[in-house]
Image 1 (cartoon, rainbow, N blue to C red):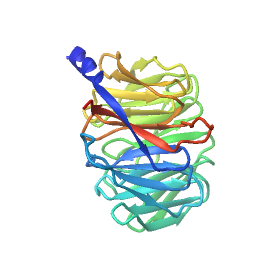
Image 2 (tube, helix red, strand yellow):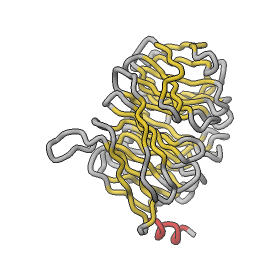
Image 3 (cartoon, helix red, strand yellow):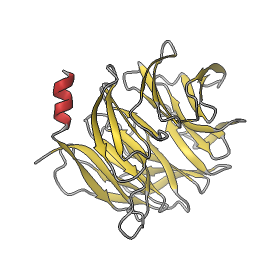
Image 4 (cartoon, helix red, strand yellow):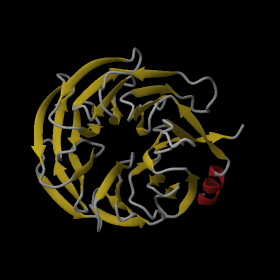
Length: 315
C-alpha cells in the first residue's frame, strides 16, 4: 500500500500562482476544497478558485483594506465563502469571498499574527505579537475573552470538537487548555526548543507539533502521549499540515524541500523541492493537493509573491 502511494507521488507536479507583489505568508483552503486564500506582506489577501485537476483559467479576487502585512488567514468551517484575516495593522477582518468585500472588522490591541476558527464556526481565536489571546464571537464580531500570557505564544488551535484549546510556546511546551474556560489541563514538554506550529489530524486521533529543534512530534490526542517524531528536516519547523485522510503529514522549514511522511510508519514518501524557506503548507480538505508558500525571490532579489500547489497529475 505504502509503496504504491509513494510511487504515485512521483507522477505529480506543482503549479505556480502569481498575483501578490510581496511574499506570501499564509495559504488556507475553504472546507469544500474549491477555494484557496493567500495572505501577503503586500497588505492584501487573495481568493483563488482552484479546479482539483488543475484545468481551466484560474480566477482570483483581491481583498484590499489592511494597512499592514496579512500574516495569517482562515476560512469559516461552516461557510465556504467567508474568510477571516489577521494583520499587523491590529485588525481582524471577515471577508465575503464572492464579492471581495469586508463584511466585519474589529481592532484589537496588538499586531495579530495567528488566527483560527473554532470547528463549529462560532468563535475565532487571535494571537498577537504581545502573547495575548483574544476570542471573538463571530456573530457580533466582538471580543468576548482576552488572556495575556507571560511566555511566548506561537500557533494556536482547537481540537476537532472544540472542547480543547492548544497553545504552542517558546518554552518548548504545548499548553493544553479546556474550552471555553481556558483552564489549564496539561503542560506537555514537547520539544527541547520553542514550538512554532501545530496541526490537528482531520480524523481527530492525532496532532502534530513543529519545533525550532527541527523535529515534528506526533501526539495521540486521547492519551496526550507522543507516539513518534519525524526527523527529516534540519532547520526550525515553521509549518505542518495533515492531508484529508490523516495518512500523510507535510512539514517545512528553511530546508529547501517540503517533507511528506506517512503518519503511521513515520517514513518519508516524497519530498517537494523548493527554492526558499517555507512560511505555510496546507493540504486541501478533499483532495491530495498541497498548497505552499515561502520567501521566494526573483533574480533581482525581490519578493516573487507566489505560492504553489503540488498534486496535479502530469498532462
